Length: 304
Ligand SMILES: NC(=O)C1=CN([C@@H]2O[C@H](COP(=O)(O)OP(=O)(O)OC[C@H]3O[C@@H](n4cnc5c(N)ncnc54)[C@H](OP(=O)(O)O)[C@@H]3O)[C@@H](O)[C@H]2O)C=CC1
Ligand SMILES: CC(C)CCC[C@@H](C)[C@H]1CC[C@H]2C3=C(CC[C@]12C)[C@@]1(C)CCC(=O)[C@@H](C)[C@@H]1CC3
Image 1: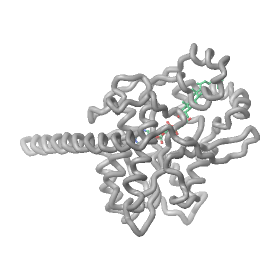
Image 2 (image 1 turned 90 degrees about the vertical axis):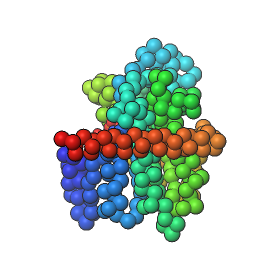
Image 3 (image 1 turned 180 degrees about the vertical axis):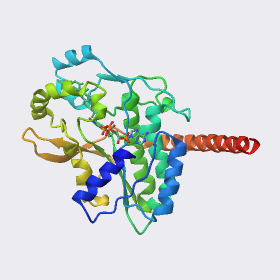
């Protein structure tokens, strides 16, 4: 909570009239999500915006050969924008027995939304969900037979594609109840996530090259401030005016101007509805396992 306290102090310095509450939440743990949601429900009776930004890319491996091959191909701009074919990750199981990337990037957020539905779905008031997805989301990385991506090497791409589909399903099912969901991509931003791919000193050395590439792709937003452009832009829009099938990209021009641009997502209604029901089924299993585990703990506690 130390970093959260520091962020809170910084916010209060720039906006002294603001009211900033903190809450601990590990989206990678079902128990933590349920406890945090209980706390939110106790503290508030309405949610205007829910930004689902938490995400991980553990143990990333860069395919150097594919990078140099891509560099001299006609696909070079797309390669820099999406990293298609460049990255794989090694995923682990979490304490709930779920794949960690799936649990953190998708399922934890899903469970949170489900728990907070009473505060999000009020017919007389519009609530907004915004997912931080990625241009790395790719249909071919996702399989409906393996939604957790247990058997592949691109869990990040798969989880982000799943979040795009889930957003579409939420819009179809919940717009009539006042809940609207959108998806953004912040572009390539220098954060702990990218420092896990290549060390920060390397990124600093090649920064002039990155500014040069930005002229051709505009997706190299590079700073968190630039990357947050689409989040801010969405905040200013009327939810009914947004396209549920679009991903809103933060972009930065070669001259450093920030703007937001929608791009159609490669998703279909049937698949997104199937994913939604798969997630509902998994939710039942996870809740059952948790309550059994908690009952066991209680029984053991009473015996001691
Ligand atoms: N950087 C980039 O180029 C891009 C990033 N993104 C997405 O942007 C989002 C933010 O990533 P970014 O800032 O780059 O990476 P960082 O690794 O710097 O930040 C990740 C954020 O997610 C939080 N987080 C991670 N795991 C959990 C968890 N189990 N429970 C709660 N919070 C968690 C972290 O919280 P804490 O600090 O407390 O650990 C941190 O705030 C991610 O969804 C990422 O996929 C998308 C496209 C490009
Ligand atoms: C620019 C340099 C000379 C070489 C850098 C090569 C790669 C390390 C990067 C090229 C495209 C980048 C990229 C991402 C990570 C780093 C690269 C592969 C992301 C996958 C980071 C996370 C995301 O969600 C995507 C939007 C990024 C897409 C581009």
